[in-house]
Length: 513
Image (cartoon, rainbow, N blue to C red; front, side, top):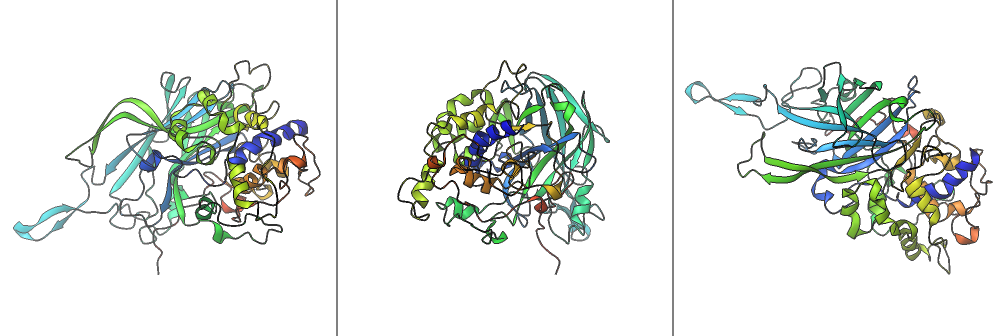
């Protein structure tokens, strides 16, 4: 296993590191116009909630940069979109299982909308209220807006495969909580939202859990300064520069689609424990605005589903794919990822960091790793590694190079208290880049590895000593690879919960005085 982990570190971490200098919020020109279908982060990991060892959890976050006070309409999902989580369990870069989520919206008062009597006698009229609630929601249902959703499991092709409904205690319809409007509307929002964690029965799989709703954005990043040409010195020799104030997402929420499923449901068989996973969102190809828009019909949609958002490993589209190809990547499927190979073999991010920080680190020559083309990244980015996160030999005859999150479901979960935010590179094999947990510090891992940390000895066994030579490149290939690069914004498992859906309750729109 250690040999395979070495290979995994040598390439996959290097690639995913390149992808992770910021979250995947607003990563492509077209998707900035469509925030309701903008995927922000995707997580895939062995469930580490006590008693759930035989499950994996998949979390697809959407609708970026939500302010808690973003009323009066807040952040509903798109009822005309199709949200999907895809799983490839044989390495051919084509989905074998897809979980589809479709949403519906309804006004209160049986769909008519809550109205108040205004005036008296013959002058009285019932007039619709402008808000999504008209009182305390969690103690006494005073909601004026409801979202529900259905889940379909598709085996085979996402559009033509065998589709079967996922069911819960109330049949095929699941309720979604209102966003956290504020403490006057919700006396205990966490308890309220907990009532929307549903047990599910998945056809040909068994039972699991689902939750869809607003959550505190779990991603941590020094976002504004990072995109201002990395407007800080990204070095932290002793950890003293780490500060929560550097997290620009500390006051932001997202909307999470969280699904827990049995491991036996997603793997091809016991001999092939590795899966690839990604999320996507699609809209009908044609959308015609209604010039006399109503709540029920603001537009008319038709035509084939057209994918407009895609996310597997973090930040690929944001800082690896060139600006001219970002929308193309969002519309593409993993099986066609060969068209983006140049962005992996000849990555631009290390060169940009060289331009920005050669003087800051006191170097007289190029500080970017010199092992070009990055064939190690091709293996990491597009195939995975034999024995670790690639479909095992004997079952991978149709292996196709493709980008997705790859998770070895045979590697046991690490309890929250024992997790290392640096994942595999720190000896925690259950963490990034073997899948991704909400508490994994992908940004710091990224900054260090992209600048060549893997050309220098690292800590594979978690003993605190960087004494393991990976043998994939030489220290001379990465002159600053031993430097403690960081975005200075800390994250670990304590920033999230240790039970499904793992992400913390969202920030309130207002607080009681």
